[in-house]
Length: 501
Image (cartoon, rainbow, N blue to C red; front, side, top):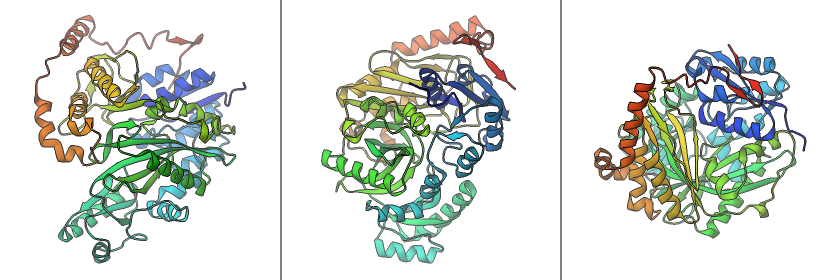
């Protein structure tokens, strides 16, 4: 089979860059990584066939500098760019710049990104496609007075959202009318500061909500499918930390309805590539409503890969090259259960980032287990980027087996020198509401008084003694374990690493 591309540049960093590099290697495609000052020693730099320096550590001067990335792509002679997720993955200007430079963008069309990038216009498109939407304002709300009138009409509680928002920014829940003014102004301010757009809109807030998303895929031949749902309701500060597939709460008949609605949504904009339709799911009534579409690969894509058996990154590459989807809707089945835990360099109680040098690191191993990570002993976790440093993914024939396997894996995960949220994951997985699947997006918020004392509890586990022993050994062995012989004579597929500065 002919290769879809000869050389791909990965416009990203960390574990997702490594994930894409591995897909390229399996397809026989030359991979090109880019790195900032802070990422000179990052694993994605050493695993790629070629690596190019793109600027200072702040993302605005490196990973968000699309002109520099296009310049490097031309210098390296690539025929495609994969943006991963975050950074430039949903940036219309970047997607257009790739096209103008004659470089394939491995992602949706600029028109797709524009159509779904604004929450108000995307909601109108979904209504036209017959996709259920949450009751709320028909467009942007310009004043506190207008917000109060809408809240009186649809009833409290309501949620205010920045139309260009994401990642938990520009969102406030209003449960009392006297909270409206401060919440409204805060959302507009965050919308302007984070997304250069102060426009906000209002929606009815679902009291018992779950966050359910449907993975969709489209090609350039107008074929569209869904790969079922992911449950993403375990969140802290509106950001996901644990995901599972399938959802323990969605009845099968509702699952099929959600999948069909997601496909209608993708067809409405003739979507190309991997995307996710996110729904608010009422755990009481089992009704679901469109929330937004992410026009990119998701962090939690591995659990869909494991349960369906399809490699989504390779499929992205094939679709971008013009090939039709390699599977049809009737081919896609769910088998078993998968769970993903996002391991972050952060305080498990305050959620504040915890940058620093990793002293010891040993990833868990064993059956039904996958770890996507860029952590290694001696690596310095920078302060400039998202604190996620690894994803632990487990599979089981049943949900209980997947949970038990995750607990075992987290117990074996040795990572010292920085604070991580591993103990938070272990505590959540043991909670009765997680075990029975009844948790909602407010799970951590409502149960933190129970969770917090458990985080302080000393864990009597031999794996923690092993971690301490490994740390002490590494401290004696070398003053600078970061070298790891990586930067000297690092070879792969018969070629020496081309580290460009």
